Amino acid sequence: MTRTVIDGGFVVTMQNRDDVIKNGIVAFEDDRLVYVGERSAFDADSFAAERVIDAQGRAVLPGLVNTHIHLIGAYLKGITEDVPGTAAGLFNRALPILAECRDPDDVYFGSLAHAIEMVMTGTTTLVNTWHKEMNIAPAVRDLGIRASLSEFLVEIGFTGLDAKTTERPWRTERLNRSMDAAVELFETWHGKEEGRITTRISPGGPGYMSLDGMARSRELADRLGLGINVHIAEVPGETEFAESLYGKRPIEIGVETGVLGPDAIAIHCVFLSDSDIDALAVSGATMSHTSYHVAKRGYFPPMEKVYPTGMNVSLGSDWCSNDLWHYMRAAVLIPRTLTGDVGMQSGYDALELATMGGARGLGLDDQIGSLEVGKKADIILVDVSRPWLMPIRMENFASNLVYNANGSDVTDVFVDGRDIVRDREVVTVDRVEVFAEVQKRAELIWQKAEKNF
Ligand SMILES: [Zn+2]
Figure (tube, rainbow, N blue to C red):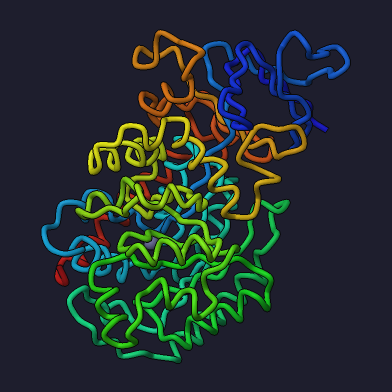
């Protein structure tokens, strides 16, 4: 058994709003928290720590939870964000590039690149969705991050997708193959790495599959006892497509096919009517709000109507940028800008989305998302001695972090009590080697994909 003490930091427990402990102690034995509280009340002698980490000048927080990512999207950074046209970055750049990532090593190294970005900026749990997820699992295993992996269930090829068309040549054999892959992923990886790796079922959503495909996805999730992630109300054209073909909106389809429920993470949820918001809230699903990502595409969900429903909201990055500090800020600032309502969300509320919101979405709120005795030792340290965070003030401490901290201020990261990042460097994989390999592979992939731009 390894006993560790994180000594003397500003402990942001996320148990309740004002709960920031100045000069606190967080102690853990192996993967479990055994003490979170005042330094003065901690019995250091009887705990007999094997190692003590000095956290003076550091904030100590629960690790961040990212409920939607495509790790393979590392290859899209800087290429897809400034493409004019309706979701053109996605359809005209991202999909042709990803179609060229066929070599399992392209997938492994690309995934590792995004996952390294995530841990180094404070994320300890991610929810990934992509094709051939079996090739992605080794990357999260090698890094040591907590991950829920899901095979992307689709009934159409990449080339069949376009924001402007309502044509969908469904290919059931493709859906069958991806469902088989989801079962293989479950059998191979669910509960592995001391439980850090789990799996989920990820129907592509109404834009990517038939109604029968949606219903079959729910059946599969129930049969395996897994939660669901679904892209829904995601891109322009999806609502028009669904209405023209079925006379229903995507959220209605999600509810009627049983896909949306309390175990579901509804990804993006941008194009929501008032009745969609009500139906989504009643379903009990968690929204994965991709705040900093969708804004690049020139649209944003009506959060001023979502928050008052009390539905559980979490943050997801999708791809390209995975520093959740950007997403927290965007989740507060963009709705304020769109509505003029400065009272809508606070910095603390944004931190709640990035921690407990994600934990609840995964049904892991008894394990992660806050610093509480008995929970997992998924912990991050943030350097608050930086000029952009000074002077320190206990009041609104969490808000100060959200508005002013950057991912690069994260100094140390523990997952299950294991060091993943120490002194701002990832320690489980060789970062320099990984990025040399990613750069080489990226240049070849871009070259091949450019003919289809
Ligand atoms: Zn996505």
